[in-house]
Image 1 (cartoon, rainbow, N blue to C red):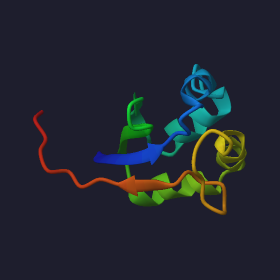
Image 2 (tube, helix red, strand yellow):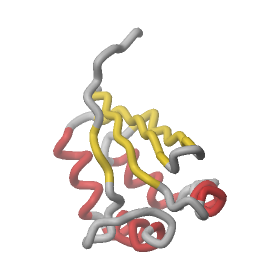
Image 3 (cartoon, rainbow, N blue to C red):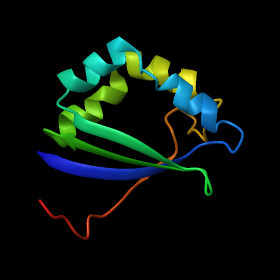
Image 4 (spheres, rainbow, N blue to C red):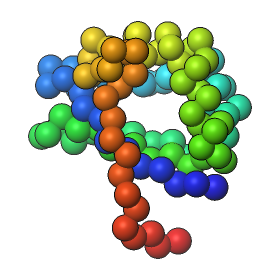
Length: 104
């Protein structure tokens, strides 16, 4: 498995709404993520800085990147664009993080 971590932002007035929309996520989105090899996906909110920190384990970069091309992912991005900064394609603005330490 490949471990990934990345950060995103949430609008300052949208913390509660962001959490509500993830409780739970759409079942079809959960299925697509699992079908594309994503496991142990977690998102954490830093309210003081409006930051979202996410971690996920994936089977391959190709399968993970293919999630973005699915209809359900495209719909999810449109659903979330009003609560977080988004790119022109509606994907969330995000930055991958470099792993500097891991203890198993």
